[in-house]
Image (spheres, rainbow, N blue to C red):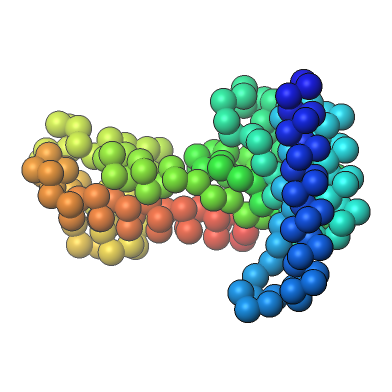
Length: 200
């Protein structure tokens, strides 16, 4: 607790310094970007509350929820995400850092999160795991050796329109970089579809 508390104090201090510089240089300066305050506090409710209050008082253009998705139990992450979004202004973007499994995105959207970043779609693709509407599959698996269907029959991405599971499996098992590229294109498209469906 004490370590997280000290880390939180440091984050607030950095936030003040950065916010002052942001205002001094002009909100958009030459970079034309927004500055987000990052709420910390681990899985401790009082630290999250004090972090959110301090940052909201500084009036950032948007807010990030940090320090989660780093190994804590899923229920703790969801609880702290819920708490954090409840403390943030409704009219400003809320960004949950480092969360990226499809089911985690949907759980977080339900709790009021707007933005995400994570390596999962691309890292998993490079390792041969692709996401479909029926769940994820390991495209390198022998079961797809003769499977002429697309990764996802309902997907309209370039990969699914022109390449079969069998061919992509062959690319992976032959160490052809095209396999990584096609799987990555598919996973990014899947995530875009998923978030569009969530928005709808």
